[in-house]
Amino acid sequence: MSAEAEFAPSAFSAVERPHRPTGNIAAAALRFGSLIAFAAILIVFSLTAPYFLSIGNIGNVLGQSTISGVLAIGLTVVLIAGGSNVVTGGIDLSLAANMGLSAAVYASLTQLGYGDPTAVAASILTGTLIGAVNAIAVVYAGIVPLLATLAVMNVVAGLELVLTGNTVLPASTPFLSALSASDSFGMPVLAYVLIGFTAIATAIVQYTPLGLRLYAVGEFPDAARAAGVPLRRLLAGAFVASGLSGGIAGILSVSYLSGSTTGSGEMLLPVVVTALLGSVFSRRLVPTVTGTLLSALLVGFLTNGFQLLNISSTLVSGVQGLLILIVVSATTLLRRREA
Image 1 (cartoon, one colour):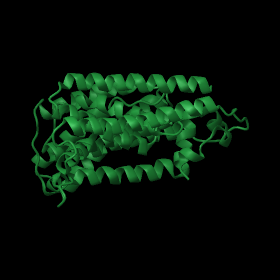
Image 2 (cartoon, helix red, strand yellow):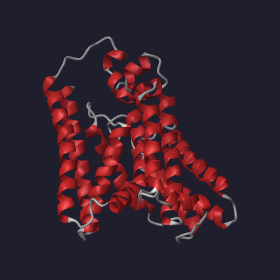
Image 3 (cartoon, rainbow, N blue to C red):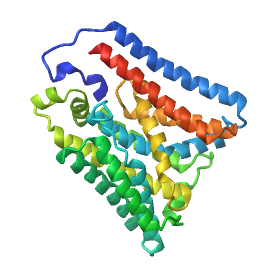
Image 4 (cartoon, one colour):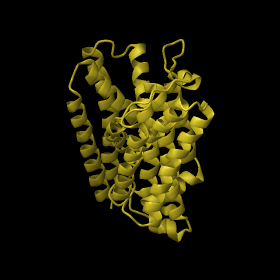
């Protein structure tokens, strides 16, 4: 049984909430409405966009969605442990910059002659250290997560510019070539990386006592504290895990782009959209790793369909912003009714 299914207020409090059938119906409507919208998007683009459902294009979407998906899963862990309020609760705005700096570290080391093991370790360590800085700022310094991660984002982006000189650092190694390759069916290796990363994160977050505690810390901190759950340690761990995902995404970015990139900040909006939208695929409208995967695919196919139809990228950003507004408004209203 998953942590989402097991988790309930009664697990940490003797007070049972009254059953609210109206809220359950509304939540189910939002969830299934999202699935219907996903299917509708696929149908519309398959009829209007050339080669939309071809194997090659589906593989391309999966490959493109891998980087944002890995980042969004890291953000999902922070959303779970920090709570639904993105101002005072769980948010990590430094993830895209984290990916950019980690990618720059990898590319820089390969240009200096270091091998893949050293570059991989350095990139993961870079991302993890950034996550640790966020954890210290939020958990131990008491800075609001929105402001703390925003400040870290700017510092990390500045370090990337210093390291790269605001230029693209090319990188080519056997490991990167293997990651950017495709199998005999035309499916990119990156797609399998996304599936594997999602499976590992799902097993940890949704099927272990650790995942149950993360949900408790985010949704019912007072009850979790009374039950002896180490809130600060778990929240700090969530930010470190998010930083780790940024380091991994940096490696994937280098393999996908054959080098570092100066436009990593553009990834922030799609990542936030993906993580927040993932909650609508959950029964209780809470963030889940599997929901984030579905959300990443939805955003990926939506963006790809617009590209095939030669629709301006500005409109794509507008649609992503609208999705954030709709999801946050709907989930907030439903939770207020339940409260």
